[in-house]
Length: 106
Image (cartoon, rainbow, N blue to C red; front, side):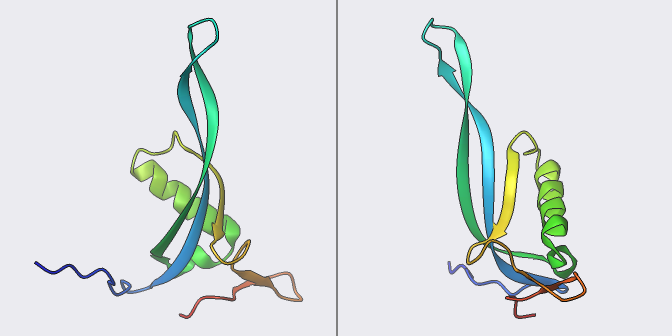
């Protein structure tokens, strides 16, 4: 059985290198033996398809990822940040203060 590991983007989607800065609580044993929790952070890199509209600006991408987390019952993971893998974000600021997708081949 062969598996297609390089799927084509669905209509109106674009592939991006996504970097998620995630935070979550891990159960620990406190010094006094009681149950406690410690904050942990993890950076996750993914190459994924997202709707073109989600790439308008960093806030829109953040909202899209958060909505996906909620739909998969993952909202208890804190989403500290959403970035692209190659740079802090994928938008170049224009003179009029608008954003445009800079590093995506649409």
